[in-house]
Length: 98
Length: 294
Image 1: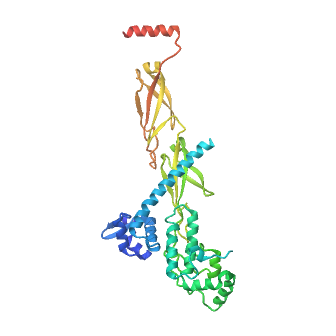
Image 2: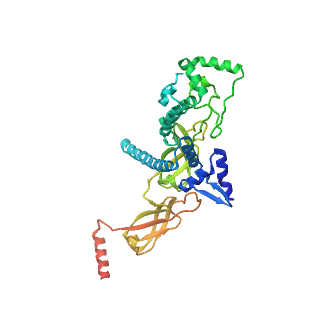
Image 3: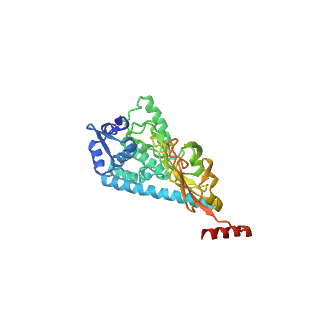
């Protein structure tokens, strides 16, 4: 039942024309999680956007896995900071409009 | 429609080699790539320009045509028509990262010069995610309700399930910015800010409140009317109720998010109010009570 909600890692590689070793490397770097069910490997659909992003960074921009790892961490920090700024701006506007 | 200087966009000389063009493209793409610049429209736009410039300059055939026509690019239309009549259309080896074949994100200049089938490879990108903050009163958050919000000029009617928490983020799939090159739309993330417009203090699914009762009700017991989030209720006060006593009203708290019919509890703390401005008679009676208690 659970398999129906997952994406086959093999199909992903065929569709995106990437080697399976790339998925393995991402997994080793802790950037994605691959689930193994009866010897078949699957990806959580929620993580598909991230995985496609990693493919673009690696194949389109020539960024190695160490770079992707650093970028992922920094983008997370950027997002947190953007959220903080957005929250503070909203709070500030409450005082300014009061 | 203006002439687009692709060499200027990539920052290379007109005599630049393929390697130099590739290197300049990679360098700029790394700087302005949408994946590396989330929520940055300027970077997005710049990346499209870089992509377009690379599309032309990295392809010897297109580069030749671009160099030939240069600023007289308007004549390219005639060139294109003549070529079409000779049955030369559609010879490009098109393939796409995700099978995209549209031309919607290239400039009019590009379309004019190379037609609608001029691209050889184009990556499609998911649109930017939008982040929004929505203020909801505590009484509104108690019930499932609908609210209309405006995101980037578009009105969106959303259903807010009862029990939403302060700071909780919900994702509305594909309500963000449109994708690039036919990619999927981004998502909309709404962070809820719960404004407390009540006397209740919320602690996840439980609510806390202080109920003030007079000394006589506290000592002798009685019945009080109490406000809860679902309306008024009558509550019996047992005699000799001590100040600070806390009691729990089961199921009178906050609804559990997305679990219909399940509620937290309400905790009330009694605060006994001592009488003030006593009459002479009241003072006498208190003195009598005091003597009896000794």
